[in-house]
Amino acid sequence: MLEFIPSLVSVSSYGTVSALSKRAIFEMGRHKAIVYAYLAMILLLVLGAAAMGIVPAIPENMHLMYLVQVATGGLGAIAAYKALHYGKSSIVSPMSKTYVLLVLATSIIFLGEQLAPGQIAGSVLVLLAALILSMKGKEIKPEKWMLYLFLSILCRTYYYTFIKNFVTALGPFQTTLVLELGIVLFIAAFHALRKRDLAPPGKRKLAFPAMAGAMIFTGSLFYSISVGTIGAALTAAISAGSPIINSIASFFLLKEKLDRDKYAAIMILAAGLVLIFLA
Image (cartoon, rainbow, N blue to C red):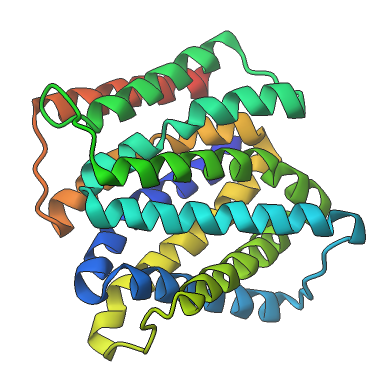
């Protein structure tokens, strides 16, 4: 059971990011919200690297792979924030977890990872619960945010499958440092080139992006640790449980209501996690 602790820390941290980010978007708009959240996260990473005496370095044979990893990570984050801007956090966050099935497939095909039957069954339950949490009543109507969500899912599938290559070569902390540093530079450059207003907001408005950045830092670091411990496929499956945390956070931070279907989904999701842990 101890090997699952990093994944549980990661899923708990990631689960609060959407709600915090939505509040940050309310305060300053999505462009500043994403940039300042990632700047806060990078500050924590740099401080941690300085404290441990880590000098980031990428092997020469991984330079091209690194650029692709950063590009997919950056585009995935930008698309996710645009989806959050146009849709509800309690709907967008659970639907985004459909990338888990794709990561399971690509990890098995390209990385040769294996899952026990119970773990596969648990992963399916987790994803089913995430889909139930995303439903508005009995149907989901096509909306603008879905296009951005689809792009985010594709990018996250690649990113969270092949992050294992970096964890194996660099270790969890340096992987988080070099990838997230590249991603924040990508995001800042993307918005700067589009001439978005990125001027610092008032100190009061920095609270929510700073908290979101801290949760991204914690989630990313422990995600990398989990990938090195239990693999990319199983880590991705457990990460689909973040809608539990997000639904609770959205209830308190955004006043988004939970109905009986969503409570049932939480119970299904919990059952799926139990199957994964005990398989």
